[in-house]
Length: 147
Image 1 (cartoon, rainbow, N blue to C red):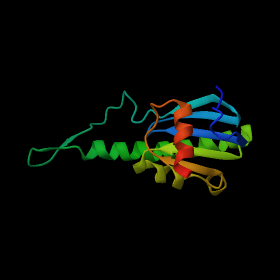
Image 2: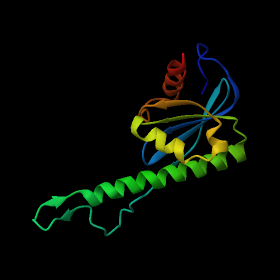
Image 3: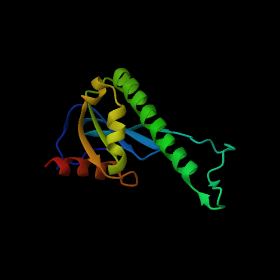
């Protein structure tokens, strides 16, 4: 897919990551080209998990505490899975920059999970959930944010 002429050409090999709390899609950006570069998804808790997602308190009321703990653990695991994946992709494909998008509430946790040498490559971030937008729209938003 071609990057529109009204956006600047990509000067250095760049990996754009569009993420939510359990899925990330990768796009390789080079010169005026944007191409799909794969995706990762976490399956936690597994669908066949027998753990309860709610508990009953001694007073007989139900609590979603365990469900919240599972969600927090899922986000924690995914942030580390994403960090590992970025390290592998940077080394293998020689990316020199990373653009990262994630919801405002999760972006910092994803950044905190990155190794310092990978974090240093993150040159643009977008604290917004944009996983349903086209890659060109996401790229446009990343450039608008820094304009």
